[in-house]
Each structure stands twice: as C-alpha cells, then as structure tokens.
Image (cartoon, rainbow, N blue to C red; front, side, top):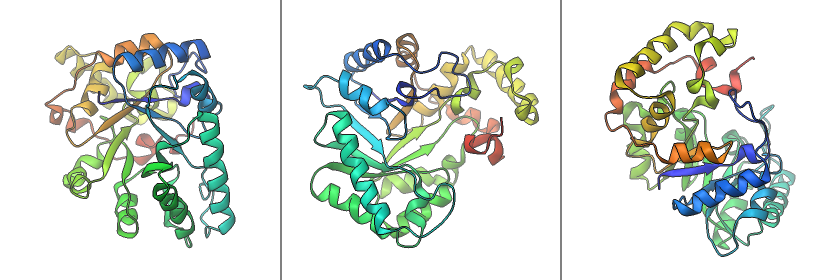
Length: 294
C-alpha cells in the first residue's frame, strides 16, 4: 500500500478545509483498524502534533508493527542561529518522551521537522544524535522534512539522509523538474510525499476561497473544468496524481475520519500524470502554506 497515514488531525485542528476539528479517539481507532485491514504500513506523527503521539500509543495494537515516523522539535524555525549542545540534548530527551508516548522501544524513522536545523552552524550536534539513534537501532532511518529542492541539495551534500519527505501536488510540481526525484532514488533515498491536497486547497469549492487566493481563481476554475472533462473528482485527481509518480515510495495523507480514509484507499493512481503539468504554480506564496496570510 503506497498510502501512509498522517495523524496531525489526531492532535490538532489542521487544514484549511477541516471543518470537523480534532479527530476523536473513537474515530482514530476506526482509522487504525482500516489501516490494518488494508496493509497501510507508514504512520506519520510528530511531537508538535498536539496529543497525536499519545493517542497512537493508546490505540495501536501492541502486536502490529507499523512503520512509525515521528519528528523533532523545530530549533531554528523563527530565526537562524547556531545549533547548541543544549538543542541536541533537548532533541534526545524529546525523542525518548515520544517513544514513551507511542508505547514503542524503537520506530522506523526520526525526522528533522525543520530541515534548516541541519543547515546551520554546529548542526553536526543534531546529526550526531540522529546517527547515534540509528547505530543503537532505535530508528531505522534518518529522515528530513523539506520544503524545496534547494534545501535537499544542500542537505545531501553534507549528510547521509535515508528518508526525505517532500511537498508534492498538482499545484506544486517543483520536485518533478530536472529528473530530481530519480537523482534521490539513485542515492537510495526513500521518498515520501506530503501535501497532496495542499492542506485542502485542492478540495475546496471556488466560492469558499479566502480572498488571499484571488490571484489563482481563474487558474483554479480552469483546473476544475479540466477535471470535469476527465470525469474525475477533486479528491481522485489530487491523490491519484501523486500516487502515479513512480519514484514516490509513500504518499502521506492526513485523515479526519474513517469515512474519508475509506474513500482515499479506493483511489487509483493516474498514470498519465504529465497531463497536469500545465497546472503547476510557481508562486511560493500560494504553494507553501507556511507563507499563507489567511
């Protein structure tokens, strides 16, 4: 199963189109059951996803070994500065707290939530902790969550990275340019794609648009009309597009409820995804949700 389960909604109200808020524990249990029944292997969480880790620790069956990924705190998100030994100590403490919450002795990957943490002065302090975790078999893979191809290039020049999580969707196709994903695969890097729905923007109706997105109203209308020609729903197109990209190993999807998860599991990949290339958007203020001012 190429789908991976994103669990930010298990602990936070997340996503521009999320109208239901935080997923209840009962509903989260149903979602985990669906994941088990459909051989979904990857579960993605983070220490900064509210109570997500704790919820997972309570509801995941002890006898089933999901490949769990959690993420570090962000140390230089607000401002660039040298990494300190205290940062490294904190990352270590938080990781062991995450293991405790998850009710696990080891997990598949610990991922740098903010990749710029590895691009600052003294960032070796953090990498040494990650490498030590891997050496002690507490994690199998050292992971990094990134926002741009440029960040990836800098990272792999300096560090051995096993897993990279990238934003990828119909509007954000930067990682499909210049055969970039194949270069990563040639380095034996596992590739996970997130943001297939662009935090729900690709699933919204145009009338629901915040004025912030007025610059792409015509573009969005053309996209919706194109989907009608193909007889595809917005959900089918958005997820099918990313599923159809060969070099993507896992597509992480955030789930609000079990009904939604059933729908996503039934969606097939779109093999001829190149037909969507004309809908790529270059404006970083649109394709990077951290830049949104809404």
